[in-house]
Length: 285
Image 1 (spheres, rainbow, N blue to C red):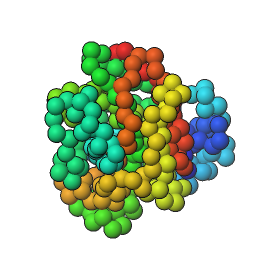
Image 2 (cartoon, helix red, strand yellow):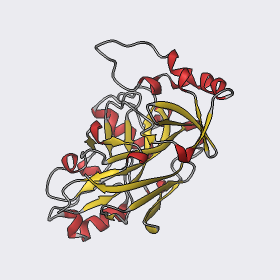
Image 3 (cartoon, rainbow, N blue to C red):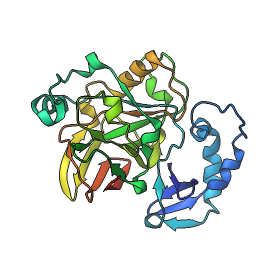
Image 4 (cartoon, helix red, strand yellow):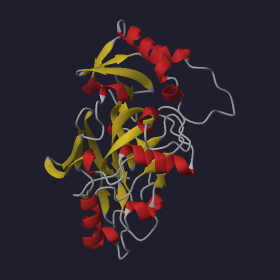
C-alpha cells in the first residue's frame, strides 16, 4: 500500500499515476484533547485503518498525481532520527573534502552515534527546500527513511524490523560549517520525506534497495542499502537503546557518497527501488 498526504491534509492511496482520496477513513481515529498523545495517530492505527482504506478506495474519487501537492506522508513524528556517515565511501569523501569536514575529524558512526533533526524541518516534496545561509555550502543527501509503526523501546536488532510500518525517500539537507549537526540540519524544510510511504509488506528486502539522486538531470549519488555500515535493524536497536521510538517516528538511515552543493533553481530527483521517485525544487528562503 502506498499512502500519501496531499493538498489540505488529505489522505491518499496512490495507484499508478493517480491518487484515490480516502480521507473519510480518518473519522475512525479517536478524538483527542489536550494533552495530545505522542507519535502520529494515523501511523499508530495503520493496521486497523488498512482494510478501511481498501474499502474506501473502491468508491474514492481519483486525481492525477501531477495535480496534487504532496506533503510529508507522516504528519506528526515525535522525533526525526538520523544516521551520520553510514556508508563507508561517504565517510571517506567527508574526510577528504574540506568543504564537508570544515576542519573537524569526521568520525565513524560507531563512535559518533545518531543525531536528531527538528520536527519543524519536515516537509513534503511539493513544498521544496528553502535554502538559508546562502553564503555557505548547502548540500543534498539522499537517504532511505524508515517509519516506525509501533513503540520500540530497547529492542534487540534481531526482529527489529517488525517495528517498521513503512519506508519512504528522504533528503537530509545540510548547511556545512563548524556547528553541531543538529543545528545545521534542522533548518525549516531541510528534512524532505516522500513522495509517499510504502508499507513494509510491499518491500521484500529493504536491506537491498538501489537509491540515487540527480541534480538537474545529472547523477550525483548512487548506492544500495546493502552498503550501510549499521544495517536497518542495528539502527533501530541503537536508537531505541537511548529513547523509545513512537509510531510515526522517522529514521533517516544515512547517505552514500556523492553529496554536493545545491543552489536556488536546482531540481533534485531522488529515487529508491520499490518506493518510487520524488522531484524537489530548491529556492532561497
